[in-house]
Length: 199
Image 1: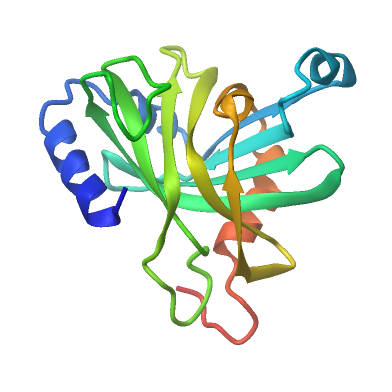
Image 2 (image 1 turned 90 degrees about the horizontal axis):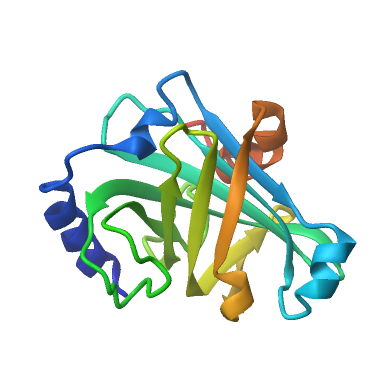
């Protein structure tokens, strides 16, 4: 789905939103969520490629919109892949054609960037879509991924890696954890490339 089209969805959905649990996650500052899958789980889910996921949600002064970073690791690949994006809470009426796994009314929809905004000149190319469904107590969040995602490695953030995700890599339940667990994600999606001034 194109960025402009999803932006229109943001505007329509947020106009009817009655609450914003996504922004509530960062009332005390940045928030971090994590999930690691052990060997036993992966044996029972042989089609699941992701072995871990970490989500960093940045606290921002503007209510209703937030910046996120997400990292995953995959079977047989120790190097994490990263994406970043901007999210906005809204009320949605399922089914949602661009996120069919999401069945609830309220959620935080995110437009991700094909390349993190860490260069002097960054493209507005969309990398994919993500939705967050936070628990009411803020201790967990369900992450819904679109089937097409573009991510990068930290070692070369200009090189896009296109992923086509199967059914077992679309929905993940993450638990809240300490901000230390999100340091690598935050660094990867916010630290400017050498020679680029800090925004």
